[in-house]
Image (tube, rainbow, N blue to C red; front, side, top):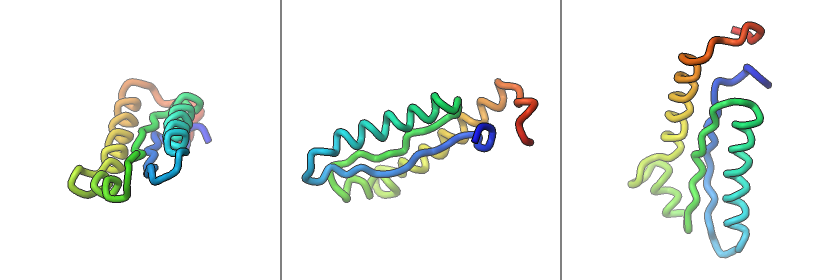
Length: 95
């Protein structure tokens, strides 16, 4: 619904495992997330982890390597804040 959200942070994990659809699923997730941002003129961030195994995903979702979901959320907030500073509010949008 236009005007309802200031930004969207997309978080998830695609783990390679032992099946070939990994590349297709990861690519389609990226494409779909980009489509949402473009179609709805909204900041949308990509916090989807792609990893070879569960241990790598855990390390990147709050473990030794940081928290990619948190990073995506902070980027979404920053983009929404920046957008509010440079674009006047829509007169017809709810406050």
